[in-house]
Amino acid sequence: MFIREIKEETGYVTEIMKEIKLKVGMLEGFRVEVHYFFVKVIGGEREIQDPDQLIYDIDWKTIDELNELHLSFPEDREFLIDCIKNNYSHNS
Image 1 (cartoon, rainbow, N blue to C red):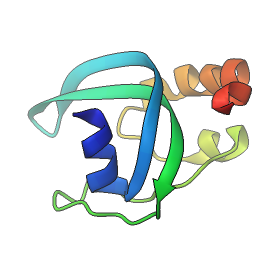
Image 2: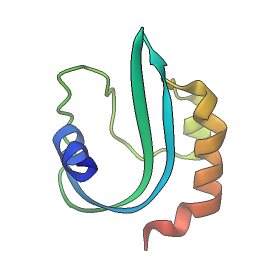
Image 3: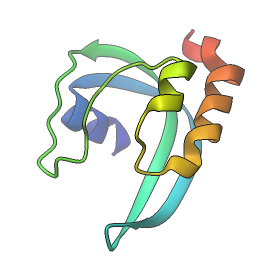
Image 4: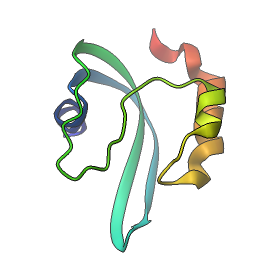
């Protein structure tokens, strides 16, 4: 299911290496689930295909860039930075 969603929304064919977090919350009055994964891109090309217009960009960010990025869940910023610091080489 998630591999299909990633492909549909980003254009990338991926392999999920590890699920690292599930976040459940409210966004603009709607209950949402956000799943965080380490993935390996194995094909496809970057293409935003988002009828809900919730995806603004598909990109790899440095920690400095992540510190400046607007996030739908800003409380997750430190979690994401920790993931980069502790698992950045996980793409093997």
